[in-house]
Length: 301
Image 1 (cartoon, rainbow, N blue to C red):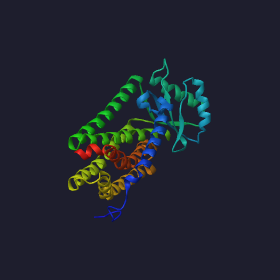
Image 2 (cartoon, helix red, strand yellow):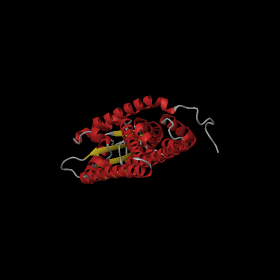
Image 3 (tube, helix red, strand yellow):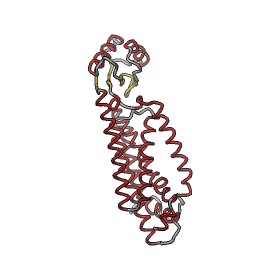
Image 4 (cartoon, rainbow, N blue to C red):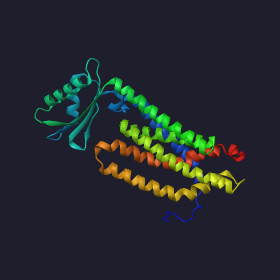
């Protein structure tokens, strides 16, 4: 079998657990802080309601001129960014009282034609979501994520022990919150595609965690009375080749999607990139770290 390294008991992974906890805490603070500060601005049209427009101009477009021109509509802040090259832009307009989503799209397109009368454009994509649908989608996304995490925790508790379930639960919340937080921090909107990526990452992360937990359970049976710190380290070392090979191949696929998949799936591929990295190290340092914190209870078992 192909392996990354041969000496399976050489590395003391848990020696770095405090550093890992510090990194996780910093990422959680930065990510959650970004989500709080941005508020609804961190969310995509899927969740807030509004109108999203993707336009391609015949000539390169000046973003500042376009932004200043749309201020006359008194629609509030309309985020505008280049999409791919200088000829293409994407913008998100929030719903305004007295204007429905379809009227909003027509109003924006008409205004842009006046601003850029000498620079014709075509509408590549238009998405409109009403406020009620946006709230409903937000609630359904949160419910789906919560039930997924709880179902996984119940499964782990049934298959292993309650302490293992607690470690898995914390690791999953850790992975999901950091992934969403970093998406917000780097300017990627939280949309349905990002939520889909997060749910995918949760499944990926728990699979890696369960492999390590299985090994820990076997080691405890084989070496009763042995120090839990050594058992976890040994288990992580024995499963690390599998973890590295699986993670690297998944990471390469996500990286190719991010680099060559196009702007449309940038949010999804970025969330996958972050999630694979965070999910891999949380299996070692968060899920297993919780077992160290509760080692006295495990020792009695």
